[in-house]
Length: 359
Image: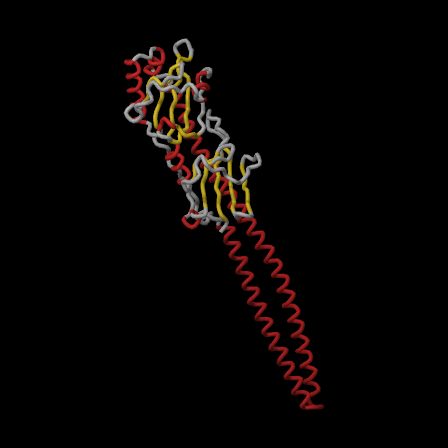
C-alpha cells in the first residue's frame, strides 16, 4: 500500500494563503493607511497655516502703509498670525503623537503576525511528523502480523529449499500488495537470510548473513509481541537505498524465537511525498524547507531533496517539544514539533520542522 498523500487545508476567510491571518494582515494595512492619512492631513494643516501666516504678514505690511488708519487692521493681522502659530504648534504635537502611537501599533501588529505565522508553521511541522508516524505505525503492525504467517514460521523451523521457496513466494505476494517496501527478509536464528520477497531483484540475499546487524540482534532478543523500530539508514544489500527496517521475532507454537522477519520500508519516496505535500504557497516555496529530522537534528527528508542523512539542522531545539527558533544572522525562522507517537508506536524522538527565510 502506498503512503497516504498529505493534505492540509486552510480557510481563505480566516487566513491569507500560507501567510499571516487575514485579521493581522488587515490590521497592518489599516495601520499603515491611518499613518498615511494622518501625514497627509497634517501636511495640509501646515500648508494652510503657512498661508495664514503669509496673509497676516501681508496684512501688517498694508496696515503699516495706511498709517494711523490701518492701526486696527494691524491688530487683527497680529491675532491671525497668533492663531496660525497656535495651529502650527498643534499640528506638530499631533504629528509627533500620532507617529509614535502608529509606530507602536505597527510593531505590535508585526509581532502578532510573526507569532501567528510561527504558530501556523509549528502546526504544519506537527502534521508532517504525525503523518509519518501514522505511516510507520502501520509498518509495526505489518511486521508483527507477517511474522506469524504459517509459511514464514514453517521456513524458520525447517529451513530447507522447498520451505524457503514457499516462504519467498508468500513474501512476494505480500510485496505485490504493499508497495511501500523494498524487500522482506526471513532470517534464521543464526542470522542467515533464508528467503526474501524479491529474489529476482535481489538474488544475492539468500544465504547472506545479517547476524552482525543491530536490528537482527535486538529482534531475536524480543519478548512477546514486540518489534524493533527502524532508524533511517543506507542498506548496501538493497542497492544502497535509504530504508527504515522494522523487525520482529518469528516464534514457534511454544513461543520460542526461531528467527527474525525484517521489513525494509522504502524511505525516500514515501518521506518525500510527505514533506513535499505540505501546502506552501508558490510565493513562499522558494524560501521554505519542510523537513523531517531525528532526535539529533539529522535531516531524514527535505522538501528540496537535499541533505538527507548528511546534513544536520543548525537550529537548536533546547529540549523543547515544539516552538520557533529565529536566527538573526541567517534571517531564518525554524518552527518545529516533536513526534507525539501514534497508537502503540512510540516514535523515535523525530521532529517535523519548517525552515523559512524571512522575506
